[in-house]
Length: 285
Ligand code: GLN
Image 1 (tube, rainbow, N blue to C red):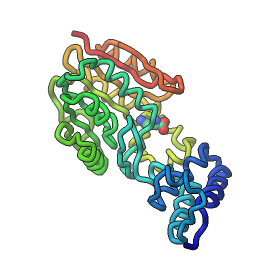
Image 2 (cartoon, helix red, strand yellow; image 1 turned 180 degrees about the vertical axis):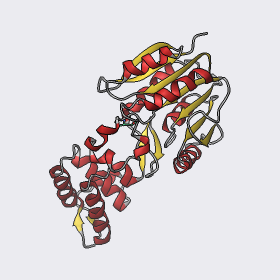
Image 3 (cartoon, helix red, strand yellow; image 1 turned 60 degrees about the vertical axis):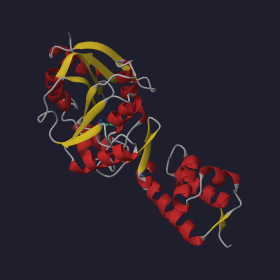
């Protein structure tokens, strides 16, 4: 077979990625070669001399061009791993971030009983990653994901089905809590919290590829919390918990909004980078 060897393709691609300032050029080049050729990561590592057909090599160059233009790998692949589950991502959804796993951890600590048949709501569900990660860990829980984007809600519903969680997850298109009443055990939300003036300075992977409506949180980034916190206080059962993701430097302000609305601050939890990322508030009994 004619064609260029895997090792040579990877090396040329990795140096282009590196020159663009991408942090893990070799790993990303391997991932994209896998996507272009259908070869497994193991095979790519084990057979560096294997030639790649010209058509597949051209497809690979195309993916590298997209990455050099700062499209995130998750968007090129159309999938992102979160909480060890595979989520489809589309232009309608925020790309799930590893930092958001802090929200899942904090929420699970509030429901230590694996058999708990709790009801939870995820505001601004996007891919459904927070809701579905929680449902995967609590097999008797059920929940609703709300998104104002119908396209995002469809992606979330599709993710729920593919992950085998479709019978315990429902998705609603609407404006935050307007459609809801009830007595909710757990609320989670990763709302848009970037101050509007900070958007132009974001990395191109974020600025040009995450939906603006999933990022922009008004002048100070706190507008969604101002709406969600009173709604949360209304919906939670006494003793129920809300876990909010917040941006860097927003933890105290969001905790204060919570206590002003009658919720008790239970915990502020840091992400792997040491940033206070999850605010845990409890409705007093
Ligand atoms: N964590 C995202 C970022 O900083 C923002 C997501 C959000 O606004 N909720 O890129």
